[in-house]
Image: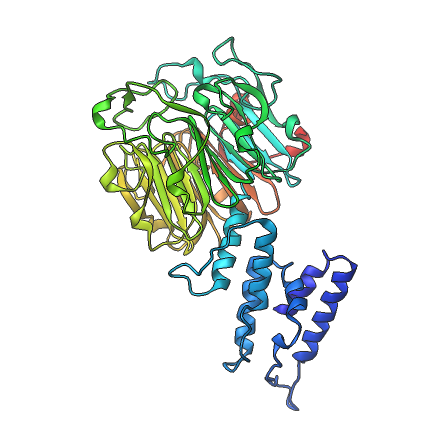
Length: 558
């Protein structure tokens, strides 16, 4: 394992490093010769100590390996020791390599081994995996638009800035149209003034062409992006401080969030009317609408007596059975504010839903806050009113959560064991338990137990999971417009997870779910989409509702 890791990394080395790598590989071969007895059977040789080599030499090479390879090397070294290894140094070369890379990247390393961790190797490898995952957001699906990253880190956007009401029972709202949502419009625009008309298939966002983008998030009315240098940008509708620029002005091109200048942002999440950002060090900021305490700033829990029954503000805030409560007064935060309640935690995962939020930490804990009526916080004791302070989802305390996603009124979590939990509104089957009931506490999706999921995506009323074994995609929930990709008709819904068979044989690496469409990116960098493809700028009626995945030709749109 060590030899193959060295040779695999050598291609990317400079001349001096390549010489070092080849020398170490030759030394390893000499230490572990392949010998056979006279009858041809292998002879097991007691190895010399790998640690007899200079630690600096080994660490230099191993620092170029990914976390998975380093774990395999460490396991091989333990196995080859045959139970009688030499006394170990204070830190192994693999641990030194992981620490060196963490320090170079500015990633958080705990001062002491957290309770429940078996070794520093597993802890450091997990931290690195979490950092990689949060920067792997290569696609994001909103209500009316999509954000896509190509293999070079170039940002493309697609969709419509025109209002379109998917729910006939809701009153039409001019706010559903968002001029500048796609990031192609120059200057600042005012929402509700004139009719937005821009509709475009995937097209490069010119304002960020010179900067590689590493993470994106598409909300209902706005967009967020993070560049490789840790800068955060926003554009779209600016009402209620949604963009974080200290005012309520809208903008049609990506604009740097000045309040986060100097902060190395690692992850962002765009909700219906609020935004979240986490630094690479694990600190959390929030801004935008705070009507339902979705910012987690501890402004005081809004009791039920302050709410009046209603159907929302016309923006699609809540479409679950029972309607949405409308507050008597609206509150907002126009500039990023740090969520002090989580300052002692290191946040690595973010999710923003309709009016609730969720965060995952470096040790796999999950915290939620905001609107709670449908159980979307996963905290049964807090189901009757919004919660203004992040609270631990105790039901997941024994599960290390590696991925999180929030829908309009439901939440999904994926654990290191490959399990998927869901809770919140189940009216449309989006929880995947075979019924349409709400859940106020996380419940394991039994139908996915053998899938070993590695990622989840919650749309407005549907859900998607990705298998780590073969990159298979599973979908369930509301099927209007073909958003599940099952090819069973425009209105076909599913109460249990179903495999998207049209993607069989394609190894999918990431998924995203929007209001009425779904996106996927393969390991080879190919983008696929299905559902209501007006969110990808296709107005042709034959293309608008795509019941099975279709590949997007991004290169032709650049």
